[in-house]
Image 1 (cartoon, chains in turn orange, red):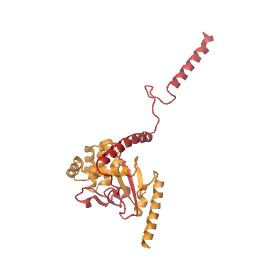
Image 2 (spheres, rainbow over the protein chains, first blue to last red):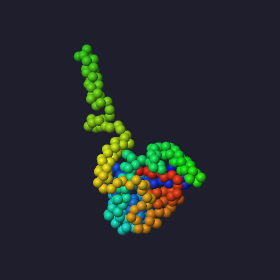
Image 3 (cartoon, each protein chain N blue to C red):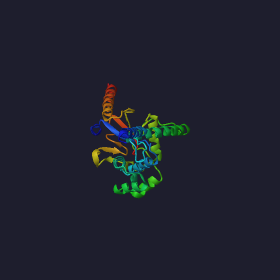
Length: 140
Length: 122
């Protein structure tokens, strides 16, 4: 998937879709709080690829924040006040509205993207061709 | 006694056969209880399906009471962030190194295609 992003054909957007309860919701909020300080992807990778039970706690999130050199006072205030709860809920509701019924679910230009990488890439290329054709028509 | 030895062997054999049938033929734990042979993936899928069903009902209820679900995509980097510039830049680590990002979006903001992934970190 990196290739289509690096070549400028597509951009990738991650949306939280909480199905495993409070710990997942906390991790999502911590990631959004880290995002306020430019460390969204560091937290994303930590949770998704290195995720251990401890990191899904307040203390664990603060450890990651310290390691990433974030402003801890700002970060803890953000997680304690659940400042991004509404944003996460909005993503969740958007997911339901788009018919998401499991994770991970991919969508390509608003259409179902399939589950396998090859299916997603096929959709990306189809969508790019469609976008190019539409642009050609608009241009005359 | 020797002439009845075959009866003893037969009885032992039948006993073993009954024991094997009693366990359903599947693997058992130390206490003789059946052990699931399902993969973690299928267990997760079942768990997911149950949770999804409950959450869908919950959110549907909330939505009906509160406000309609927005039908427009969620803005990249949307949120109550005082300094939005701090939430964007260029990724400087890992396999996405060098790619522009804005909070939860990575790649060219003008790219003609948007791949959205809905996921849970766990």
